[in-house]
Image 1 (tube, one colour):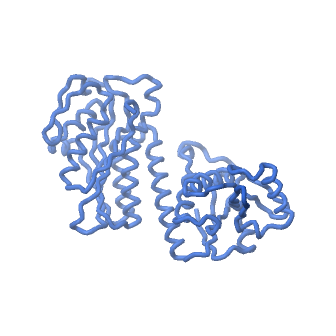
Image 2 (tube, one colour):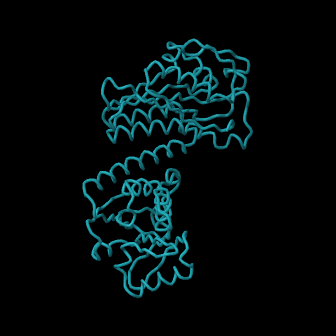
Image 3 (cartoon, one colour):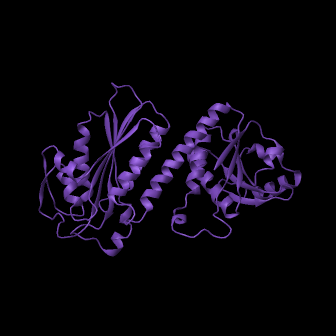
Length: 374
């Protein structure tokens, strides 16, 4: 994906785009057209005006229009009050319909939005709309995958600032998609060890980003019996993933993010039903989010110190599984009585939170899928 910034809207650059994003502000008093409208022929303007009149200039029109004099399409969207949430949604809708037409080049004009960080949001949401996990397991079609290749962004603002916003947007979009990718992998691929390896791969891609992995021996030495207990029933042994990024002052207390990393949750001996188990390979989405948040923070070189902690386990039934009624002495010395083996998330998070306290954090955030309790 290539983002190209153009200083001013011009016909030469516009003719490169196959689809233009035309935002129209509508209300009872007046109608304000986006700048792309001015560059259309009189015939094409009449086509757009007729569609707006037919829909009584209401908010919420989202339409792909094939024009007469322009070789490409217009993606028409009408809004009354425009905000960043609408920009996100409309950007993803725009990409979706453009891809359906097998378009490769699309265009936006930032002066139509007048929102802070609109270039960043556009870049992030374009990449999100490009996400397609199925290509990892499907054969590429003869006509190729439907992906955008270039995005033309017109801006009258500071070029360096726009480029920086786009770069940050790309970092965020790629991090979000990586978290979605990790969460979507089948459980045979995404084991606790595989999640730990993904974290190590990330640490090699960005600076000031370190990773430490506690294996089962280290977990036992540290007294992390809660994580060990939840993972005991599986042949895929548990791991504790600890990531650290130092972008602030050495005296700054770290922000700590903790993510639930249950790579597959069968429920343990309190076995889930077949329907309830269907999406349990995604019970590590909180952990994936933490991994990718740390990567994005490091890539953006934010001036903060951050620690990411992910207890990664597979909760399976076997002769080695932890049981209802077990009492486990967790890290820090407190004991946990197990009332249900399908409540494994709070067991591993409790231990991770207790460990996080030893890092003298400024604040602790937890990210978790609450698949039953919520």
